[in-house]
Length: 226
Image (cartoon, rainbow, N blue to C red; front, side):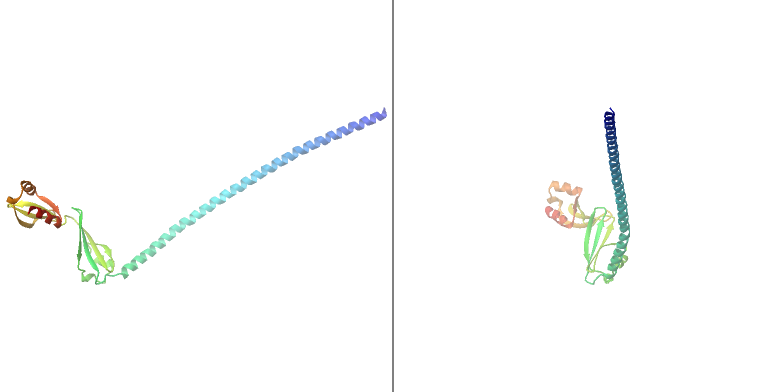
């Protein structure tokens, strides 16, 4: 009986040891799972911190680049404008009217919206003058073109140009009147074309007055009445 009890006791003690070992392994497994979970959390937190630092660094870099670019835009245009002003001033001082330069006057008429371009002989007073000196000499005119070989001055005139004509019957013959700058009429030409040789339709038009523009058109209309 004692032998059996001893065997049973040993068997019982062995079962308890195995049970304790199982519990130990179970706890170890749980602890290992927690450690692995904590490692994953630390890894995620580390990645998040790196990402935030990268984004902040990128924003700071962009702001720094933008600031430098804006600063460069502010500085360089001022330098370029200064250089351009010096270049233009030097060019105006150096380029002067040559004795053989072409000279023309361009007149704008605000009442009829026409302009006349008249070539003329170069005034001797303009020879060897620069652009600014020409502007000072012709105070009422604007320098539209300037070079050593050509000078063109422009001016706006309040009124009509001298290319407006009115053809009408006067004393039974055809007369031509020119429209003045202020709109007044002055006789420009008288003809021998008599009323008696004109069709009735032409007579009615001439009594009202036929308006033409340009000397070329004027000559053409008069030829039709001859």
